[in-house]
Each structure stands twice: as C-alpha cells, then as structure tokens.
Image (cartoon, rainbow, N blue to C red):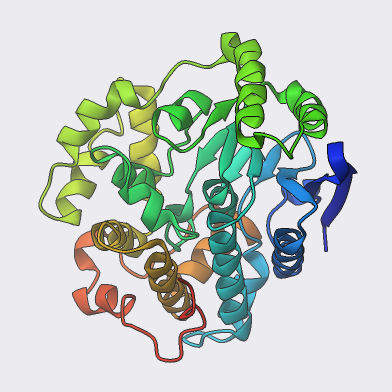
Length: 366
C-alpha cells in the first residue's frame, strides 16, 4: 500500500504517531490503497487517547507528494469514453473524505511538505493544522496541464488568496517556494530539510500532559529561528499588483488573453506562466474561473461536495484522459484538446460540471 505507520513513545505514556508516504519512485503519488490506509489509521489515532500528535511526511528526497496516481484512472476513461469509471467514484470520494478528515483532526496534525507538493499533495498539506515547508518545497496545482481542475479543496484555499493570485495559480500551475507559501498563508513554519529528526525528537520530549500547545509552539519557533537564514526570496507577492491588474477582467476569455500575452515578457516567471496556460486545457481554464467564483460563498464541506461532482464530469469528458495521456502516459506533451481555445467552450458544458448530484457520497460531511 506504500504507506508506513509508526508510534514513538513520549512522556507520561503518550505516543507520537508518524505516517509516511512510501512510494518515492512515483514521488509519493497517492493511490487508492494509500488513501484508504491513511484514512483508517488517522481515524484510529484520533480515537486513541494516548496519541499526542500526528506527523505526516513523505519518504525520499524529491517529494512529499506529487499528486494523485491518475494514470490508471485515465486509462479507464480512455477505455470507456463518456462513462464514469467506478474507480473515479471511489477514488475522488475517498480522497476528498481523507482531506476533510485532516482539516477536522481533533489532535495536532503536522505535515512536513518538502520537495514537490503538487495537486493531491497540496490537499494533504492544506488540511494539516501545522504546515511545514523547507528550502526544497515547490507547491503547485498543475491540473490545467492534464485537463482536470485544482481539486482536493483547491476551490477553498485558492479562492481565499489575496487579490487574483488564486485564479492566477489555478490557471498557470505556477510553483510557490517556501517564502511564497508563508506569505500567502499556505504554510505555517519554515524548517530546514535536515531538521526533521530534530522535530521528531522534540515532539518525543514534550510533556503532552501540561500546556502542550505552548510547548509545541515553543519547539517550532526555536527550530524555525535556526532555519530563518535559508528562507528563499519571495516570488509572487512582489508581482501581485501586476497580476491583479492583468486579471481584473469581466470574463475568463479576457483573463486568458491578458495572461498569454506575456509569453515573451521580460519577467521570466510570468512568461513561463503564460506559456503553461496557453498549452493547458481550455475547459480547465473555465472550470478554474467558475470554481473560485463559487467557492467564496461555500463551506469547506460544500467545496468538497462540489469538487466531487466536477471530478466525475471531468472523467466523462475527453480532456482529462487526453491530458494524462499526453503528459504522463505517452509523454509526447502535445495534448489534442477538444476545444481549440477558451472562446469555443460551450457554456452548457461548463455549467454541467456544477450540476448537483443525487445520493452524494460526501453528503454527510459537516
């Protein structure tokens, strides 16, 4: 199942729980068995009075988690065009339920998010109560390139970023470094990649029976002070004013045009963002625009319920399967999108992704 679990004894009979994603060859991409194993163990730990806190991490030096394992899902979509594979119904329902479980954890839940933190990895990180990034962290929602959309709660956390930055990251898959994540409230602490053992040792030494919150805060603050000199420079807040002006548009096609016009811009980061958007799915661009607009008025549970319906709709359309084929299966990086540009995507196709479902498997989320 590519997830390992351990418990380390702490003071006064408490234990520190550690869940490790253990599929480094695939950059710890989440499979359905991994999701189920995490859900079951996190539930058990939440019910165990002797578990003081939980640390979620990924093995290997390259990634905490580079997203969901979508290749098998896309193959099933390719095999039965227009249908919704049973795997899709199970995968997205259980992944979103896991993410919601993290958001509502009754105990301190720490996520160590080093290296690549993409898609499903962002869903795990944003659900944690204490989100740690490192000098190697690269956070992004890259679904525009595979014909999906920023799911796993992306509607929630992107819509709450300042100005137009959430829309920008959803449209361009632009990566954030550790400083960006802290600046935009997508992370809480910055530690060095080599400080994980120090963190675990500190958690073991805490007296969880007496003022645990204060002790945990002091531990994290002390470790962060040691790491502060390695914090990278901000990339996106210095560009916010320009991004806000570019995306101050009435429609998605106008926003799309404003961004892709930067392909030859002197600003290398913005030029790369424009190139990614131009090569991305026109349907996904519309979904990003609409999901962020809607999510501002939704609760977290309502966001996951909306995203589940969107995900099943994406599996019925050819864009998702074609995007995964081009990027991850054949790797020709030349997806043949159904619609040539954002202006040609029918409004009814976009609206259909937001049709409420009967007998929703996430209806019980509170």
